[in-house]
Image (tube, rainbow, N blue to C red; front, top):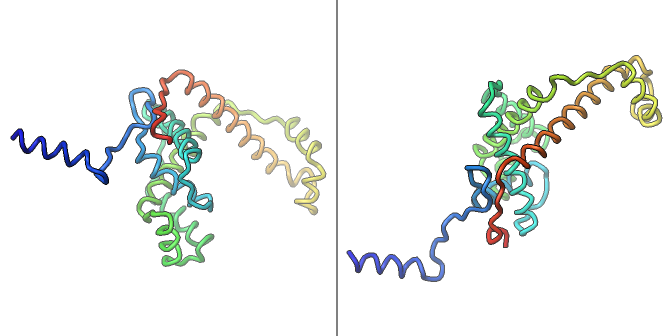
Length: 212
């Protein structure tokens, strides 16, 4: 038995031996591992249409995203928030396939392969993104009130831009669009303020060796 243990120790010390999945960040009682970062990077860059970047700076950005996601995940777990259906993610994937890849499965799979991704992994990521969006809407839309004065002020401040974008529409035709825009901005503001405060109230510990 002692011999077997010694052989195992020597094997683990050899060059090229498998490296354990290290902890990158501690978030409360949960951890973000290096493998989580390595999984997030290609998914995010694929969805954004960006080249694959595995630099330390990109890894740090991915870690920040994953910290935010963990904070959101913990909040979702404490509330009775409606979740999207699996079919919602399938519809979003179909839209992505149509808009970016001409509705062709082979082109989508080729693009995924360049990032080391699978369609199943992409579907899971899209489902999570829909979960976050639905959480933000349910949690932070409440209390958002856009007045007629707010809409009029926005129209006057952005009149030149609106005329270029909608040359045939007057204020009355654009009022509902402006109201939706302002609601979205207020919801995002409420969410970002909450997230910044939530991050202050949770333990976040970075393991710097994971970002070399």
